[in-house]
Length: 367
Image 1 (tube, one colour):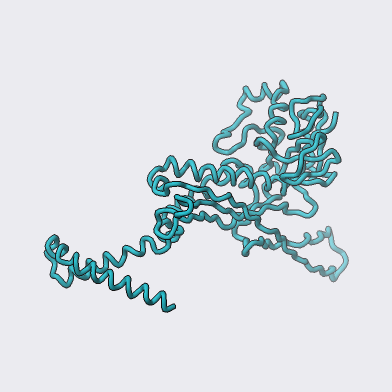
Image 2 (cartoon, rainbow, N blue to C red):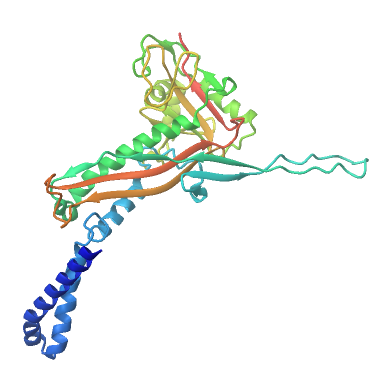
């Protein structure tokens, strides 16, 4: 505490001294009275320390951080456009957990009721909870922070790399959380044996995807009484292009089959599904059981697609943070000869029903 007061006194004395030296110059340039010139100089020098008071991104980098956060918010799902195609629980986040009220069962309906008084029931509501995950990038050393603040190309290059990596990783985990291993929700491919679409590390052949397979996915959601509007199908690129070789699909593409993929991520529409693609969606073992993201590959692994309705899955976006450290004087950390930058996103995802209605997966079958 004493050290803090001592530093403050020294700083005040220095500002008073500098103001006394500069006041005559201000008086000569502006014509204002000497006391006013002294006050102007004192205030001006007094504000200078504030520019570097907290050089770890709170004051001097505050505006830049706001720009970075805005960049992340705008393009966070650019590499995973399917994620927002769900129910948003952004407003239900409490710390790291999402709390969503769930309505109880529907009341019974009687026709031409003859028994009175009627049986009185009571609705028991529940609560859906799931946690947000923390997605953070490794810190990156930037040799000259001024280059980032001035050169938007360099800033966009550095932050763009962070955003793309976050987006791709978040997409992998969200897809995995929406997928299922429940046997009644799984459809297997039924086409001819093919080696053109294999999971990473897999060998041999798998039965190719067919139009009937996609129709069976649609039928599964029909049996769930899921609305036609709002159905999505996320496919690995290899399986999509395998499907696209079917003559009926090729002919449909010539007749306006495709939509505005650049704006929406939807590359095609089939059997009521808006179809999207990404390099990888989900992987199943040969039982088939869903494999967690990052699990070691196996030669018997199978690719999977996810079909869902937007009202039956959810995502919750929490905090977005950009952390920077440019040293005590804002010119960089001496031991690194530059500044450090990293980003963090809090996000969670979940299926909305315990019976997993509104969700189905299409998994390759062994040939």
